[in-house]
Length: 128
Image (cartoon, rainbow, N blue to C red; front, top):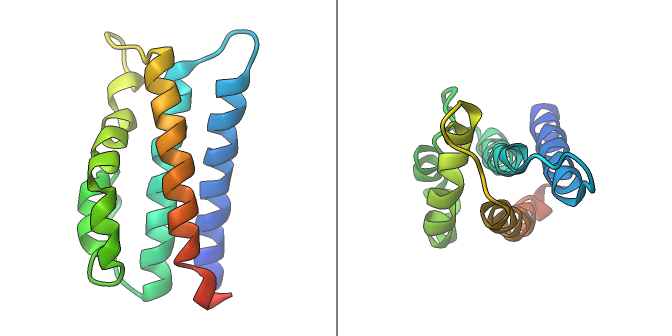
C-alpha cells in the first residue's frame, strides 16, 4: 500500500472516530458534526481506494461522483449507491444555518458509515 493511501486511510479513521465520539457524547452532542464526519470518513476511504488504484480524482465531496470513479475498479460498490446518496447531503446541508441533523439522522449516518467502512476496508486487504 502506498504512503498517500495510508494517509487517506488515517484521515478517514479520524473522521470515523470523531463521528462515533460525538454520537456517544453525553453532553452538548452535535448531530450535525456526527453526520458531517460520517460523510467525510467515507469520502476519504473511497479516495484512498482511488489513490491506491492510481485513479485521478478532483477535490469533490460528491460521493456519487467519487463512486462513478470507483466502479471500474470496484464494480460491487454499485450496491453502495443508495447509502452514499443519504450520506452525500451531510457534506454541506447541516454545515450552515437553517437545517439541523436529528438524532435519527445521526444514527442512520453512523450505521451507514460503519457498514460502508467495513466493506471498503476489505478492498484494501490485497495491498497489505
